[in-house]
Every structure is written in structure tokens, then in C-alpha cells.
Amino acid sequence: MGIQNSSTAYISQIIALQREFFRSGATLDVEFRKEMLRRLLVGLHKWEKPLAEALWSDLHKSYEEAYMTEFGILYEEIRNHIKHLSSWIKPRRVAGSLKTFPSRSKVMSEPLGNTLIIAPWNYPVQLLINPLIGAISAGCTAILKPSPYTPNVARALEEMVADIFDEEYVAVVQGNREVNRFLLDQRFDLIFFTGSPVLGREVMTAAAKNLTPVVLELGGKSPCIVDRDADIKVVAKRIAWGKSLNAGQTCIAPDYLLVHAEVKESFVEELQKAFTALLGHSPREAKHFVRIVSDRAFDRLIGYLDNGTIRFGGEYNREERFIAPTLLESVSPDAPVMQEEIFGPIFPLLTFTDMEEVIKFVTEREKPLAFYYFGRKSRGEEILRHVSSGGACINDVIMHIANENTPFGGVGNSGMGAYHGKESFDAFSHRKSVLSTTTCIDPPFRYMPYRLFSLIKKLM
Image (cartoon, rainbow, N blue to C red; front, side, top):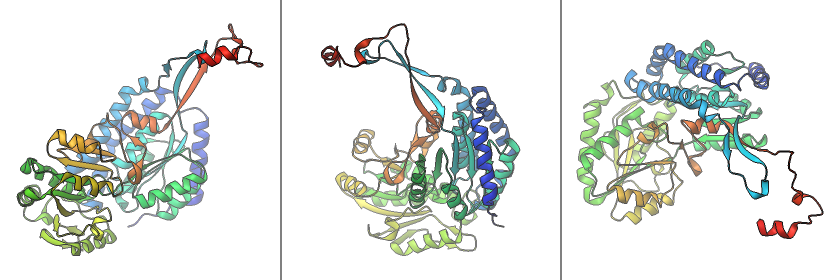
């Protein structure tokens, strides 16, 4: 059963309630924010089982994978905010200058206000609640919009949020793109959107009408480079895991392979072994292999199979929306599979002989959300100086997102803004400069007719 659209009257009512609640100043107190974070932590534990069952129903996502990629990340994030919020919220003294003598300056963080968080379907719990943690921490209210493509998860999230929070503070609204359009026509103090670059442009266009700031977590084609001196067996295992996770439906999944020609055959052999070790000889029967989210997404992915020669994999079942991990060779750089973010378990492989080829190939395309290099660390660091990406790993994939002490975000076509840890607090805050001046001293230099101008010019 699909999701019913929330009515425009209900959405308008919630927006009005949240504006009034924010204006009351109830969210400003740090102890209130901590209590709300603690309440969210308890609520997530309470609702973990229903949410896990919904994830299995919508995506065939196992509990183990759900815990690693959804719940576990959220528990750690909430605890991190509770632990550090008191220090993050303190005004920060900054040095003064001769120009502002005898004043003192500080920077204080204030909540942006009423926010809208729109989440995708691929990690429907984590990517809705993780930004919410930042909103609560910063002292904002939030309207949450889950994806209708995972309807069981969306309903469970709505029930969970209603169980934890009053709707004047945090509320869930449901629906399709018509609801999105109505929401985007309203005035918010921040819109946090996770999704495709195409929809990201629509969000930014709508936000511009109200000069609303945005955080856009998008995606793109994240390259995976395998150099000739890489540890092929370990490399293959890590890459296979990164592509198998959520069946490749991950914004930072390795999208395509650029493998040094000298190690191509040995790498392909090890990659096939690695997929088998992870998922068995029949991935369709594997407990830990997610299904494709919709018939439309399935049909798009199957269309890519004609874009090259299938080296291994290629099996699929439309009724179950199952696609086996598939390696494509003899792929043209101009083929559709090399133009669009794949977002599935299909892996095009190209070869190179010179790293300049790789740098040219990657930098001529849109900036990716992630960049992965396997080989000598020193060479990887040198390549990263020439390639712009949202984040990167040397000799690993995906795992840079796991450290809550580092920012996660895109650049260019892959997004703008960042979050996780303090970055989430900052994303939902305005950093306000405050200058305090004594009235006991009143230097005359700034007043007309500027009699001390020659002295001031020397000092400035």
C-alpha cells in the first residue's frame, strides 16, 4: 500500500504551529535541546524493531546491514551531540583590533529557525534522522519529509516521530512530488535535501524565491581507481563490499572502475571471488543482499547491461527486483552507464596505463561525491591534490562517512554544505558576530570631521 499525501491544509497548519513555537524561545535552552536528543535516542531504541522490519519489507535490507548503516550511525551521532553540545553552543571570544578598540568581539551560534528536511529512499531512516539531530542540537524546529518509495519505513517513521515529539516541534508529512512542490513553495529558514542532482536543482530554484539557505547532499559518479601496485586481493574485497552494500544504492558507492591495464585480469578474478565470498554463488538467495527499490529503477539498471560485455553476473529477476553484481567490460566512455549515476550493482570497468589519463578523465566530468584510490598512499595523496570531490578514501571505500568528527558533504554537482558531528550543529546555525563596547571611553577618531584622519590612515 502506498503513501497518502498529507493535505496542504495540514502542512500549512504545522508550519504555522512550528513558527509560533520557535518564536516562543522554547528551543533556545541547551538543556531543552539535550533532553530532546535523549528522547530521540530512547525513541529510536524503542522503534528499532518496527523500523528494521519495515526496511526488510521495502528493501530486503537485513537487520545486520540496517544496524550498521542506519541505527548504529544514529546512536553514535546522538551521543556525540549530547556530549559536546554545551561546548559547541558557548560564544567564542575572538581577538579585537585597533579599529574596534576598546570593544570586545565574540561569535555566537543561533538557530536558523524553522527547517525542512527531505530524505531519500536508499537509507530512509538514517538520512532523515541524521539531519534532524543537527536541527535539534542547533535549536531549530523541523518538518520531516520521508520518501514515498519506501512506504513501510515512511509510515513507521511518522508513528515514531509522533510518539517522541509534539508536532509543533518536530513533525512528519507524507507524499509524492506534489507535496514536495507545495513544501518548497513555503518559507523556511533552511532546507536540507538529500537526493539526486536533478532534484537538487529544483530545490535550489524553489529556495531562491525566498532566499532560503540550502544544504544539498546529492551524488554523482564516484570513481574507483586501482593502480598497479595495489594489494589486489584486499582491494577487490573492499570494493566488492562497497558495491554490494545496499545493492549499490548508495550515494558514495564506487560507481565505476579505472584499473591499471597491467593488473586488470588479476583484479577481475579477485573481484569475482570477493563477490562470491560476500554473497555466495547465488546472490539472489543471500540474506544480506538488498533489492532494487522500484520497477522504474530496475528497468533503468537493466538497460545498462547492453552498454558493454558482461564479464560476470548479469542475472536478474524483475518480480523480485533482483540484479546480481555485474561487471561490464568494453564500455564506451560515452555510453549511458558512464554518463548517469548508476545507483545499483552494475560495475563498468575501464583500463588505463598512465595516471595522467585518470586525472584527465575524472576532472573533465562533474565533481563526484566520493573519490577512491587504491595504491601507494603517497601517490594517492598527490592525485587528491588534482581531483576535487566531496570526500575521498585511499585504500578503502565508503568508510570516510563513518567518522563523525569529519564533515560529510558534496562539492559542485555533488552538493553543497556539510554535516555530521559539529558540522551538523553548524549547518542549522547562524554564526553571529557580536561586538560589545564600553561607554567609559569614546575615541574621537571615527567622528566627523575626521580630524585624526592622517593618523588613522597610518594605523589601518
